[in-house]
Length: 397
Image 1 (cartoon, rainbow, N blue to C red):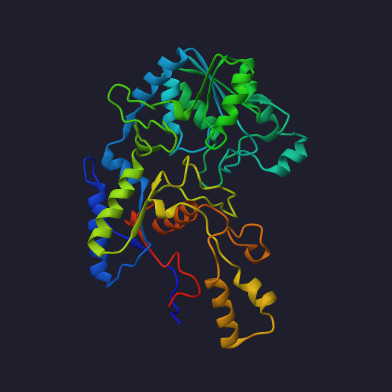
Image 2: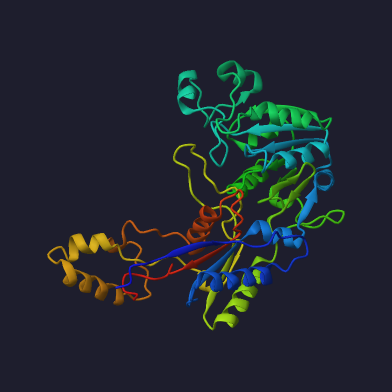
């Protein structure tokens, strides 16, 4: 029996610049890795490339001025409610700078005790001690400071309340900060709201519309078309963007399905095997210590080949060993389990006890999370990930 199962390799690539052919560079880098590491490609190997270099190759950038121009055009540039931003210098500070540059006043509604992805303004124990209910209570800045004082982020050392307020004022824009978890609270201050939540944005928009807001926007409605020659994303707008320079953001890449299909074709033609491909962003996992949920992108994978559609359909080996074949051991047990696996059909096992405890998540979310953990976010220099054996099971020799 083969002893090696899934193998995941980070693949180094040249530094990607605007105008580069990202599909060809990805394919060339993988083929070079095949030669260097003596890798024999197999059917259903997966090649993944991070969204960052795809967007960089596309030149999908925008300036703070271009963000400001779009906000001004879509809101009128007066008082704008900005709801539920995440607490991130990398992800949100330049967006907020653009919003402030494009209007006269921002009423900033911060969710508490944490933002959407788990960055805490205050911990639950302190809320309990103060008798504050975040599900019902809205606090002014003065009330928040009186109860909780100045709190810095444990990882960054930043007081995001001050940081965001100073950033807004630095653009000659007035600011009022409130704390709450009801997006419609902003309608007490303005009829124009930009809701900045990522995964709950459609609900927030619906609640605002139903409550009579005049202008309702999400991050996906800003830079969904080019503004003054900017990059854009017609599906996600500013969602998934990152700070590039002090005045520029990199947007989420476009046309990722086309990129994935081309990578797949180049490598499949070169190898004679069916190679799957995907573009990946943030992984969908939660840090058990910092409580931060990693997924600040709108999706884990904005584009992938058809062979990556679906969810795992796996049997739980320990369930079989402890229950159905609890009286067997050694080769007899192995053969019985292999026979059960081979007998699987394409019918979903969800709800069946023999699959209980397996992971019924989308393959692209699982594989994308694996890739994000492999490539990291720093100086590993491996924006491409090559995976073999992901679709193998206990019966594969």
